Image (cartoon, rainbow, N blue to C red; front, side, top):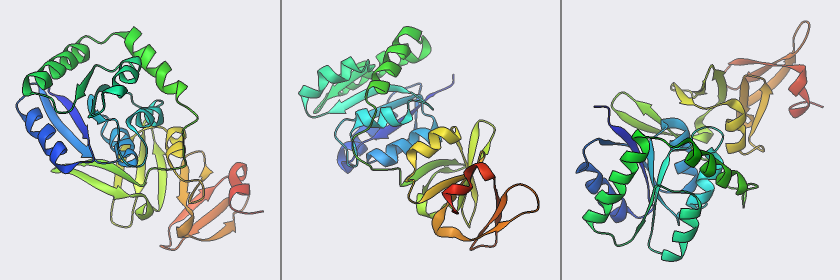
Length: 251
């Protein structure tokens, strides 16, 4: 039996440990990763594509509802909201969550929520997904200007947190995006359009249909014979820039 992959989003270490411990007792589920704030949660959802998210409503950066809004075009997992404040419950159910765990909850209540999530994941309701997508679309435009500052990527032995400032450029690869750092290349499943919405445009600029570059790493821009330009990074790496995007780097 294939286990459903679960992401835990909780900023309190003790609460996160409790969720992790409770999840370990549930057959048919496995831990996909953890996040402790809004930007980290978005990066983890986009990078790991979990089946289910145990999502605290009040987290640093931006709240759980905005997390869903920021990933709506790429991956919308099942959601069990978690909160110590019951006034969020109505909004959570309006968001068509699978369930809502009010802290402190019992192990029996946790199992009930996960059993409900299992049923929803194994017998998906297209109408439910349509309502959820409608809800998160209604949350845009987002409050604030906090952008993703790290991505969670899957590795053979677990997961790695890749800081955005360590990424020199992004490049599309079919249904994935490559994250290029000095040490390695990592893959996340998302589109370039969705990626752009998560990045600070003052630091990251699209220079080609397939490429987004870190401005801090750009050394020079050189014209090429024919159409386009060559963007040279401090590392010596050269990237192609099309004329369509030239105004983002040069007059």
